[in-house]
Image (tube, rainbow, N blue to C red; front, side, top):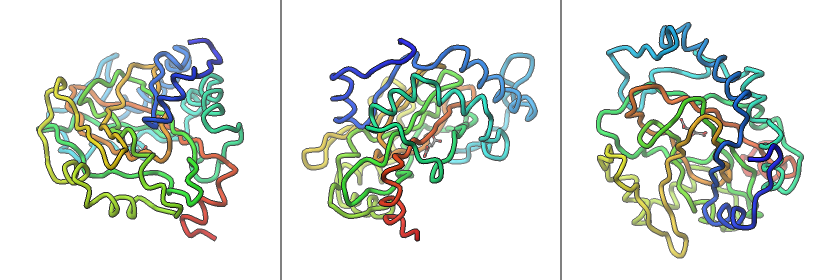
Length: 273
Ligand SMILES: O=C(O)CCC(=O)C(=O)O
């Protein structure tokens, strides 16, 4: 990956269709190493990282408990983590997807660590689909979210799940928050299947559900990857945490890049003054 990449027409078309795009080795190994050592130092204070290896207790949490609260146990405001998700390569792609360099820093000010201890019995689909920004009456995308990895996250390893294609649902010319979107989806057979059936999908070879609502193709995608890989995801895409059936913690970092020009519309959609 060049230091300041540009998305190809094929990648842009994929992003428009799926609302998400995976970029291998987007982030610098040095930046990843700095962020990883800060986070592992926090895990070490909790006794979960010792002598260069995970030290996982026998008694594990049960999903949906993650067994760790990143805000409390790791903290979100680490310059090394902020710097990782603001590397020039990231900012160049965010600008290309957002259509502007101006990022709002009030609604989602900084980066966030996403972490969970192994916590799965049978691996089941979560039922907490949500969006982090409302649908806007203009139909425009509020922005882009990056997800990246400080440890390798494989299938069923607690990755964030995203519903590819869901950014193209509900272009209804009105504001919709998560509650309205989920209510609107309830009668749809595909969504009812996601919400009601508690599949046991522990075998990573089993495909996750895919289907359609009207002419919008949808697929549940696990945002898996290795340190340095990243996913860029349209902020309209429905997503959720998922159980971690791996033997080690899931450690990811995310940041939401909200388009500054849309803050008035987002504020109005939330009903803020
Ligand atoms: O992967 C997770 O723990 C959930 C991430 C999420 O819901 C979010 O970024 O809004």
